[in-house]
Length: 99
Image 1 (cartoon, helix red, strand yellow):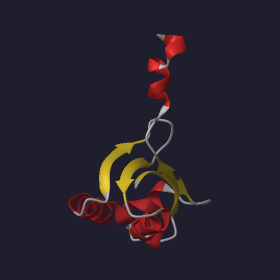
Image 2 (cartoon, helix red, strand yellow):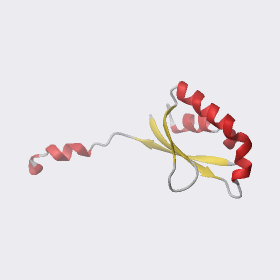
Image 3 (cartoon, rainbow, N blue to C red):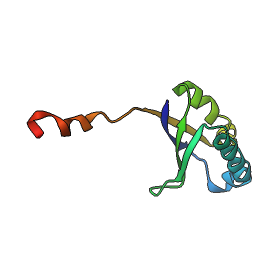
């Protein structure tokens, strides 16, 4: 299952509180990448944070893996996990009315 995972900064969390965890955060992300859970990771452009495209058996499995990030374990972030599926509307391009 493909998932879009967006970090959610917790109220009151500050960049100074994040700082001691950032190296361990990157290491954990690398381990998830090597294990095939993290497929892509991006810095968000609208605010500090990340967007991850993940692969997991379920939303719950993704939450479990994401909860192991050091910032999550420290209570500084949480995660929104959105399941994704194939875009099927391409077929409209080939329907007789659109030919």
